[in-house]
Image 1 (cartoon, helix red, strand yellow):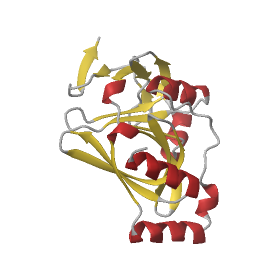
Image 2 (cartoon, helix red, strand yellow; image 1 turned 60 degrees about the vertical axis):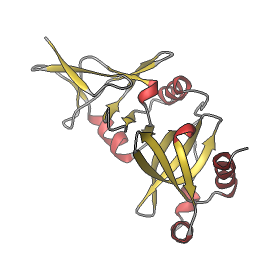
Image 3 (tube, helix red, strand yellow; image 1 turned 90 degrees about the vertical axis):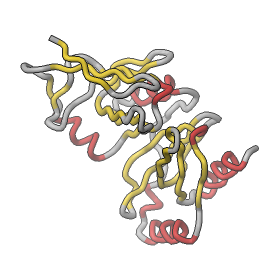
Length: 205
């Protein structure tokens, strides 16, 4: 067992807060913080925290993890979470199959939850939010909605190899999802993200 796998198992068993450094592209890293509530050989499920609250779930690829930290600052965060009673909320009530991206998205869709899919590499910088329409062996299709809650007419196709983080059961997503509506007129755009390509928009007449 390598160091990263050992730390994942340790934090999962001990239910301790940690900060995770992830390599999401060439010379590009991102940080995630929270509690590991499940994991497989390929992915971990993080109960993300913010402002001493548990806020949502993240699915993260293990092969992108460079470091899992638990220093004096993280120990302080963990202690405050305990004292504030937030630690009691840490856990997962959904069964998410962490075998592959395909099984992850199918599991989330089965629970009728909408998602944010992030492709954090600077070469792509893609962000898609909305319901999961379908999943194939290589792609997930998301019915993206804009800041006004208007759904795209056609779903966004996202290559699994480009995905670095999937967020679900987040307050912003859950509340906004209650007020979504279809686009009735005007321009409609279909976004497609593939590995190594920048996010591009094609106007659909």
